[in-house]
Length: 45
Image 1 (cartoon, rainbow, N blue to C red):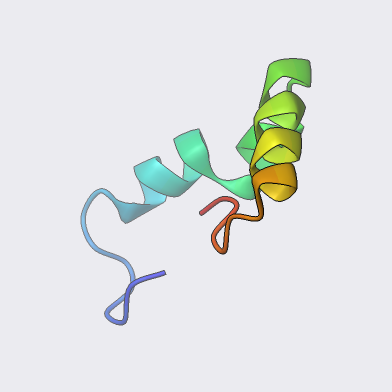
Image 2 (cartoon, helix red, strand yellow; image 1 turned 90 degrees about the vertical axis):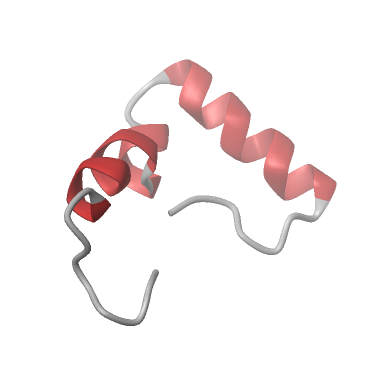
């Protein structure tokens, strides 16, 4: 997350691409799973 929170579109970005948005759908869970398996440092916003 950026230092000066929130930027104008930050809330929208987090709502669309955030952790809870990913977890809320089966495909989103697949994305998170893939990123965890790849060893990504940042999994989601």
